[in-house]
Length: 97
Image (cartoon, rainbow, N blue to C red; front, side, top):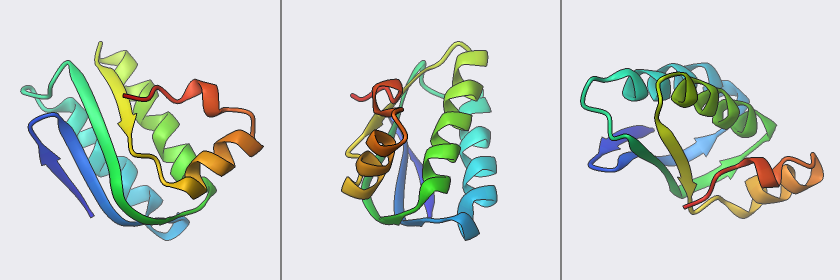
């Protein structure tokens, strides 16, 4: 599940392939809102499970944010997502904060 907060969005539950299309669309929708913060934080503290699609969604959100002039940051990445990002050599491409 994804929900808006004052800094961006919070996710909870799973970020798996079966949810990727819905998460991608929802996140892009929040980014495109007129009142979206210019520094947009995606808080993943309550995400319990991820697979490689979580990285794909994250990078797609980054592309959308950049096209809109939004500084998107990720907070509290789950260990599995960090591990996969390191495995694929893209961990330094995920803006944290």
